[in-house]
Length: 175
Length: 151
Image (cartoon, rainbow over all chains, first blue to last red; front, side, top):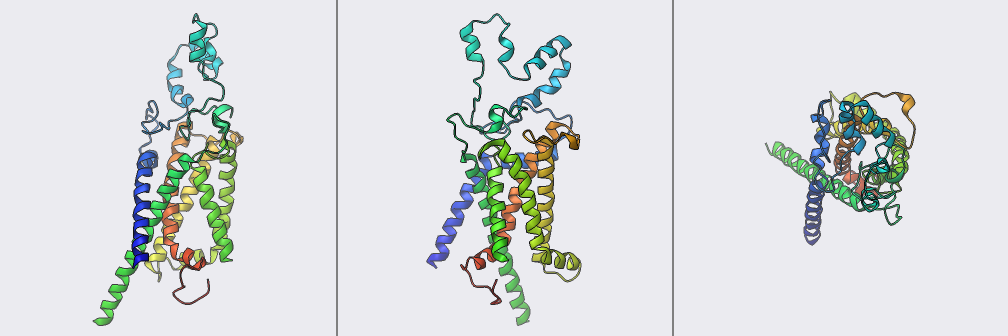
């Protein structure tokens, strides 16, 4: 009995952690996004992903707008290859402000997947973190929690189905 | 044989979890290569369970327990999910050049597809493990097999 109760408590804890992870990761929104996808869908800002703001890389958002820009301005943007700050050299901005606006090379925000990657695979794309670490499994923990929660749900639904089946069989035998 | 199946399943699960965040474990290059390798392991997993697949496929519309049928549907969805995940991953790959494949479609579409398919597949992975939990417990000698057979 003690064993059963402790397993139940453990299962409840896994479920609660899973639900927190589910919300934190925006699991539902991100899972069903493909079903709401249409080529005309406009993705604004960080895709409204909530915590951590896991949006698409900036380049993807800006592409449709780029088409509407005059050729001269577009050319200037393209020469920068989507790296904000690089095209500021020729502008009349004080050095201090330019330094502030220019992103640091290899700057990371630790926001998780699909964030601000660079097509060439430089910088963030390689997945190094500001402190030089190559492993940061904070986000993975939430995925693990959600995974475990789904497992626990499946185990208990399977058990319930087995119980119902057994009861039905017993009833049939009695009749 | 069962130990091999278990080790492969465990490796797939760990890899899948680590791959859920592209930058969490040795960056994007690892993410892309491991994503491809996981596909090979998945095929291996299917080959090792080919006997069951064949049996249920043949008897799916005839005499087949409802549980096995449900397992089969989950497995088909998993197969579809993993295929879409790898395909969309190939389409948006940055460190490996797959441009020669000319998959077409917009970057946004493939990215949304990659995220959605990976999230749905992770949920299906959990359900798949839950449905095979008894097998895991028996294999780890934490539970006795019902029919007394040695697993």
